[in-house]
Length: 478
Image (cartoon, rainbow, N blue to C red; front, side, top):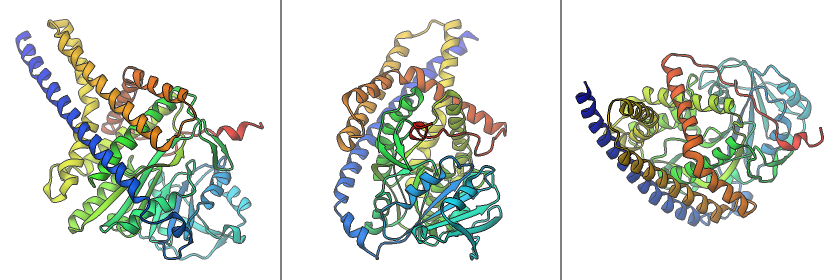
């Protein structure tokens, strides 16, 4: 028995070594691709002057779709922020998804809403829509409110909003998100300038938990105060700048964040819209849109903009964090299972041969491999002489590699966007990166594994379980 286990350990050590080497090489490729994408983005900023876009009537119309479920606390100020976006041709479609608080009442009172006759073309099936509301005040003529029965998911609410929208492009975001006033013009630019058919664009997202916010607008960007938001700030900088820019450069982007994404409505409808029962509706949608274009054999692109255009609240306690990441874990394994036929399928081009396998090997399997590594390590302590030198060297290489990636991401982010107020905040972020592998990463891994388990055992809570806190500014005078 000991001999068989010893042979397994030798095989496992070789497997881990090859796996980690492949992982490192992949990230080096992503790093180079990310750098080239950032350079290209900087040059493209001058393709079409911003002032020209804001004054032109020839720009494509954009609908901003915002699902709202029990958002009475934030909806008035945040909606005013959406209505203040700078773009010549847009509307804001708010979907009241069966809220059981005063969300609809506040909308009616603060925006002078009246129920109107509305031709509702239900291209994507949703829970029944009770009515549509428009404002009698011309100041709010860009606003449309959709009132519907609760569909149990953000996907259902978003689909109802897109069904009700009038423009060929739409942005999907969240009511707690705060967008830069030029967000639409930045996201729409690839649709206007690229030769290929652009079906979606995304952009950087940052954390608003400690920001100074007034009437739905960020007055001052502040570094997160709590531990979990700080770790997530670090994670967002690395993943959005280092990862998604690289995939965008290769035209292999598989994920446009649910917090901020712009989509071509025609491709959205043809792909079937958001999947109502998905726990990762944003991930699932992009895969289905890519599959659609590959099957039609039509050239297309999905682009990512390196500039942060959206600020959103993130979980600031262990319980909320576990809820969110477990949901992400369920969504990851669910989506990969649904679309497993494209795995290494040449019919789906770079999606099937590179992007999807990457998510299988380096997103889905890594938490499982890490758990197996811990189990095997404990067993070797009991039954065998442990090759501690090999294990320590391997851990050191992985640790240093992540430190290099994180440090480069932080420095690039600060050099280009200057989101932090002083050197102290940057040093805090670097310090967090040093303790991230031993404190934050194990919790995150456990949450994803829990999500896998919940999916396999079919224990799936509904959308809306995670409660938000109000922004700091709303409590200054209380």
